[in-house]
Image 1 (tube, helix red, strand yellow):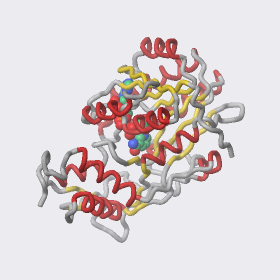
Image 2 (cartoon, rainbow, N blue to C red; image 1 turned 90 degrees about the horizontal axis):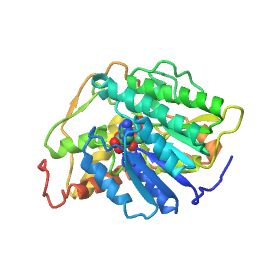
Image 3 (cartoon, rainbow, N blue to C red; image 1 turned 180 degrees about the vertical axis):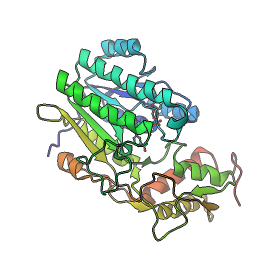
Image 4 (cartoon, helix red, strand yellow; image 1 turned 180 degrees about the horizontal axis):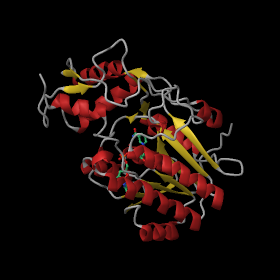
Length: 350
Ligand SMILES: NC(=O)c1ccc[n+]([C@@H]2O[C@H](COP(=O)([O-])OP(=O)(O)OC[C@H]3O[C@@H](n4cnc5c(N)ncnc54)[C@H](O)[C@@H]3O)[C@@H](O)[C@H]2O)c1
């Protein structure tokens, strides 16, 4: 097991820096005295105000530079690497969302395939100590064997988003092999927390509650055989990335892939009642969502959860924040961010 410390004398380039994970990672690196160059095109896939709020949290740091740019623009990326010569690159910029990829496939190819390739090419021409990139639990497709292990067969992605992430793993392997670039892919499992993504279920449920709308739960209303999902708190994800940064893969081909998930799947209904409780605490009154139960969606697997053995062996860390704790932090942030305690912005659901 390697327990190297993060080096604060290096230059870290973080793509997707005002995204959910990118913001927290950049902040953590800056807090440790590192220099961070953040790139993001601040696209409007979800509310850009949230992205600018995150940016405001990074701008006061002297060691932070922000570049509003699209990673699919090869010339811009090339110039950026030439100018800053980063030692470590963490690629988090991507078009996210599984459902959105049915309607908008082009953007996934641009950002996740062409953009990713541009970053790899830049790492080839301006050599880096370590290239780390976001993959996703979606590469496991409809696999039924749990927990999901990195050695499992992942050649059956069931969305274009998942195929772009699997492609990233393949391209990274090739560049490690051909150009000796140390690369590590991280398969994240549903990340949540304060300032999280409004397109994700826990955030959307909360929005719906305050708008007085019902939430749809795709589990047949069957609580005995409920779906199980692995939810990972943002601080655990960031801790995992920071631990992986100084650990470059060994071997002929310096490429490795790790799951970062909680390894403790939760029943969907338990997650929802924990969210209700967290919001009740944050508001000081009883919160109960109006629920509509729908059939399980085609292709949904009963359980998704990560084996974290490989990560733990490599860096001595595995995520373990309980959902009650993580959701409370989300709920407290949400209520404060939307100024709901004073009942100012959104319609209350009484
Ligand atoms: N959050 C999760 O649960 C989760 C799960 C699995 C994988 N991931 C992966 O982790 C990474 C970060 O996810 P996140 O949750 O922070 O998402 P996010 O959408 O909040 O962040 C992505 C950021 O990248 C930026 N971006 C997108 N396309 C770009 C482009 N072409 N050029 C420059 N910037 C671009 C967006 O503006 C956004 O700010 C993504 O690669 C995502 O696929 C996230």
